[in-house]
Length: 208
Length: 238
Image (cartoon, rainbow over all chains, first blue to last red; front, side):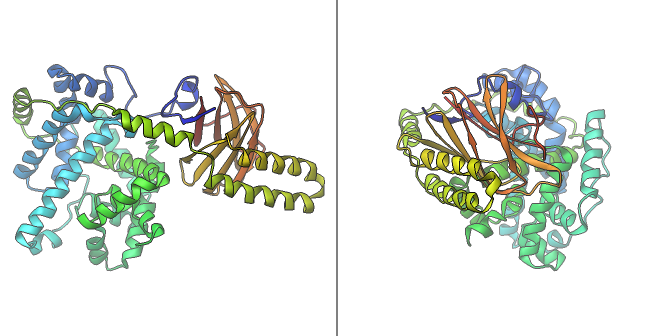
């Protein structure tokens, strides 16, 4: 007898494994299904995919970088990277939306960090004001609902959890910088970032 | 940085809030820590929702520019599973039950002690201890350790018609809830008992068939006749 994980053997387990997801698992209309078609060079599928994620990719990058021109440049790079490497997307490691937005955020952060290295960081970057995070006009009902839910769940965090998460994720600061900005010990920020995200995960009903 | 400290960095990692050096150290740690990988996957799915929450209309013209650029960009070829990796993996599955089996022997010893103090459940506990010990020492036993969603890890050691589940560091459930162990055959789930509220938990699955799976769900403390929630742990035997 050998033992394998469910990731390897799914047969018979379908009913138990069915987990609710923000984005469906397979099928042509899901992001995963679209990515599969994109991987085979399907341009119309890429257009549909762009319409699904273009605004959120641009939005998260702009939240971090602020500058619209620079944000568009990075967003274009990311979306092109989605096209180029759709063949490497592995659904076993996470959903398509996670894959795409993780890439987008990381690119924005890379830009922040490399700019820091180049300019030895202008003071205004560290000390820039934080705009209220939810000031944008949503273009679709689903987007607005999603934003509502994220805002509601962020409000459910303690102040320190929320600030740790948003200064890092939306502000683009490392946790060491966040500790500096909030004037709290490193270990505290590390922990608040983790338990804040865990609480958000539960509030948003995220299943990885 | 100790493993425990590294483990606390899952949140900062998912938020891209580590500097390059720490990120590298954490990536190395991830390779050896299944529970951390699971937690990072969940927290990354959470930060992706923060990205959706930041959605705003992209500049006019960006769509056309992206599509035009894609039209003249070659896509990379997909990775092809390499035979060596598959061989290595098979070898890994065939490794004899080892570390977890040793831990289970300690558990079996503990159950024997429990049998002595809890007279009314003594027979049951003694029988369970004997099964745990027989599975843990079976040279043909196979073991598999998988992260439990929510936290902690679960190990299943299967030998013959028995499997032993051992959960470590399982988060404590609220009052009135408990982890319940199941034998799953096709669409049929049969209870293998309520395990407890968290921490270190052990249970035995009997009448195990070669195509069965072993799963754990969170249920009311009195146990359920069939699973009423998504499993937090699931391993298929095939």
